[in-house]
Amino acid sequence: MTPSRVRKEVDEALRAFVDRQRPVLSAVGDDMAPMVTALDALLAGGKRLRPAFCYWGWRGSGGGDCPEIFTAAASLELLQASALIHDDVMDGSDTRRGQPSAHRRLEALHAASGWRGSAEAFGAGAAILLGDVCLSWSDEMFQGSGLPQDALRRGRPVFDIMRTEVMCGQYLDLVGQARGGGVDGHAMVEAALRVVRFKAAKYTIERPLQLGAALAGSGEMAALSAYGMPLGIAFQLRDDVLGVFGDPAETGKPAGDDLREGKRTVLIALTLEHSSPAQAETVERLLGDPGLDADGVERLRAIIVETGALDACERMIDRYADEASGALTSAPLTAEAREALSDLTIAATARRV
Figure 1: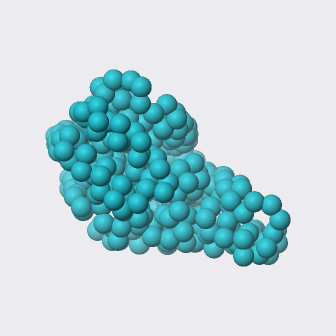
Figure 2: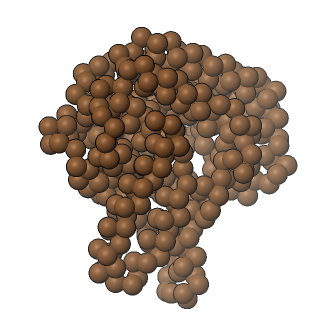
C-alpha cells in the first residue's frame, strides 16, 4: 500500500461522508451553504498524516486492508478540521493551507452581505460552530465506519482520550501565550515542550497509531508510544521552524505568521533562553505584533539564528527523530508497516526551508 493509495482511500471516504451530510444541512436552510463551502475549502488540503498513522497502526497489528478502516481513519481529518478552525480563531490567523481561514471567510460573508453588527464577531462565532460540527461529525464517522462493534469498543478509549488531550493542549498553548515571559529560559522550554506533547505529538502520531492498533486488537500501546511520542515532538518542532523560516508556498501561510501570532514555541523559548537582555527585549516587543512587517520578521529571524536557537532546535529534531527510528526497529509491527512508518518518519521531519 503506497502513501498515495492511502491518501486516495482516505480522501474518498471523507468525501463520501461529507456528501451524505449535505442534505442534512440543506434541510436546515440555504444559509448553511457558506458553512459547507468553508469546510470544503479546508478539507481539500492537508497531508492526511493522522489517518496514515492510524491505518498503519491497524495494518501493523494484523488488521486487514478493508474500506472500513479508511473510514475510521478518515474521521481523524474531521477532528483535525475542528482543531484547526478553532485554533485559527484563537490565533487570529488570516489564512490556512493557502486560503482564507474559516472565520475570515465567514467574516467576509457578513461584510459583503451588509448585515448588522460586527463582521469580525460573526466570523469568529460562525467558525466556532463549524468547528463544533466537525467535532461532532468526527465521532459520527468513526462510530459509523462499519468496523465490527468489538473493534470500535477497543478503539473508543483511545479515540476519546485523544480528543480530550488536544483540547487540553490547546488550552496550555493559550496559557503560554497569555503568560508570556517572566520565567527562566529552561522553564520556558519545558513549558513549550509540554504544549507540544499534548497539542501535537500525542494527537498527530502517538494516538492515531495506537487507535489503529487498538481497533485491530493489539495491546502494545507502550511500544507504540516509544515511537510515536518522540516522532510527534520532532514533527511539531519542524513545523515550528517552518512557521518562521518556511516558504509560504509550502506552509500555506504568510512568511513569519507564527511571529505575528505570538506563538510561544520551543524555538522561541530557546531563543529567549540564550538571548542577551537587548535581544530578549526586542523579541518580547515584536513577538505577537499583528502588524509586524517584513523588516520586523527579519529582525526576529536574525536573533533566532544569532542566539543559536535554530541550530539547537534542529538538533532536537534530529535527536527525537533518531529516538523514534530506534524504537520502530523493535516495535511489534509487521515488516510492511515498519517500512511504511519509516517513510512517514522521514516525511514528518524533512526540512522544507
